[in-house]
Amino acid sequence: MSSNKIRASITGVHGYVPNYILSNSELEKLVDTSDEWIVTRTGIKERRILKGDMKGTSIIGTKCVEGLLEKTGTSANDIDLIICATVTPDMFFPSTANLIANNVGANNSYGFDLSAACSGFLYALATGSQFIESGAHKKVIVIGADKMSSIIDYTERKNCVLFGDGGGAVLLEPSKDNTGIQDYILKSDGSGGDMLCLKAGGSLRPASIKTIENKEHYIYQEGSSVFKFAVTNMANVSEEIMLKNNLTSNDISYLVPHQANKRIIDATANRMGVGPEKVLLNIEKYGNTTAGTIPLCFWDFEKKFKKGDNLVLAAFGGGFTWGSLYLKWSYNTK
Ligand code: UT7
Image (cartoon, rainbow, N blue to C red; front, side):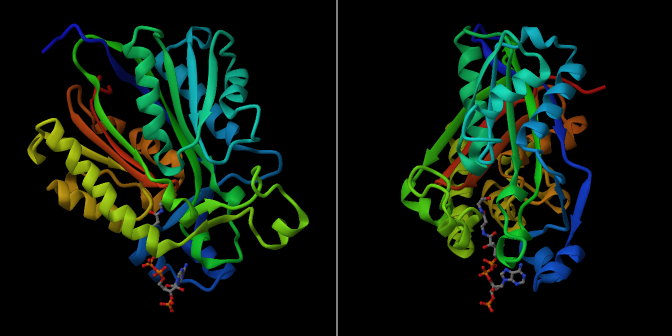
């Protein structure tokens, strides 16, 4: 079916994870935890860590974009806009998107970072799609990348088992064959902000000896409370986008969920009525890479997708932020 509406199609994906593998057994040596606890509570077996000094999230984003440009045969000079979703920018400013643009030679582009924690990639994809649908731009790159190890306390078991480093990037271009982004629902509720946050380092609590002593530059999460909100809201919003677009579970080719906890993903899939064969999972390999999880899933499972496949993306994270996005895949991979 064709229509005159310009839609934003994903025309290429590329991901990057650092080489270093932090396994559950290595974590057992650092903190009081066990492979059994981690796997049964979360589904995570290992995660990747970007080791070395002076290496920020822009390194992950740069590798993603370099690979994406090569794979899609795109010249860096043709990129109009780069949006980088991240909560671990290299610095508050300049934006990580600007650093990545400079690294890849995207000299005709502008860019900005977008902060929506684990929903960051969804928010950025919806944002990027507006510039394509309006006709303002022809080539937009959307990146989701985080170096979570930079805000993790590896002496405290609660969070260090959950998170990893990595990211992915997609190229958005206009399509007139009705493939591409069809619809999205984005939500936020700042009353949940205190339950999952980075307490210090911003204008409220600038870095000081006290904030360092209090370990306030590490991620803070009330895990079981966040879990309850995540399970309910990710399932609700995924059901909502199906109803809004008259999609039955049979219509859905794949659920591409944020990878925070396999139990949250299972609850979402159950509510949508989709079987495990349609649920894309890579949490066991990478853990929670925050804005990186969904584009990393695209990267890992790209070969499975066929043109016209209906994908539902869903995420929940700090803010609180959450949402779902419905897209029709735009190409077949050889
Ligand atoms: O991606 C952004 C949004 N974030 C999320 O979606 C994360 C949502 N939350 C979760 O996924 C889960 O709450 C966690 C995986 C973080 C924790 O699982 P849980 O089943 O909610 O465990 P809990 O926090 O209720 O803790 C249960 C027990 C506690 O011990 P007691 O009090 O029962 O004796 C914890 O101290 O497990 C203990 N525990 C651990 N034990 C071994 C907590 N962390 C660990 C650990 N290893 N790493």
